[in-house]
Length: 310
Image (cartoon, rainbow, N blue to C red; front, side):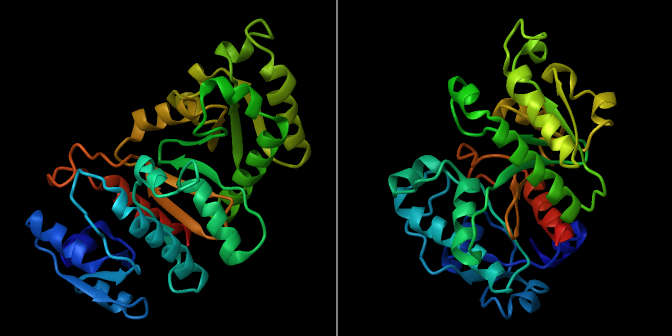
């Protein structure tokens, strides 16, 4: 992360919210040639051009052993996310870029949300007022996808996939593609839930009773929506050229194709919030933590996309 490296990636100025002593210890353990400077949000931009600016997030990292997650570190993780949103709300930063979190460890410390996305929705309410429904979009140059249901069992999808959920998701996606990505007339393509999109009801009626009526309602509201299409034919090159984003009923329907096409370059973008938030599209990878072999490309792309979106 030396100055030359930052310039070579053309990254916008950023600062890290963490425990400076922890960051310095990790850099030393990995023998990284990096200058780390503890600073404030007001001074971070100037520091960026000579060192990695680290702003103390308010809690020390208690353990911080690479590859060995410890519930004692959960408070510092959650505090850094809270502080990041607060910085944006105060105008001290333009966007939030988060790293992967280990939810199983956070749950031991009382974390009550299914994931980052839902937690950020609560923080948006805390700092901006009003109610926000966060929508997760995975973005790459090749493909953008939205899972309309996320971290729930497959057996619960039919119960959670309502007409209201689809319409609300579609409107949020269309609005933010216009506002954040400058897509003048976003084209939304919807996947069916069942094989062959239900085969005219022979393999399930969700497409007929729920998804198709929701698409019709979105069209009536001025959103260019199409489908439902069989998920197995939506993601080849010719099909992708016909839409700007694919919305899928299930988590894996959406994430498998983008992680196949752009695993190293995909970015998790949270739509529907009053601020920009991006993140790498991968998990914590504790099996390689501290070994210096992780690919930083997705995080680099997340930082660059946050800069472009703001």
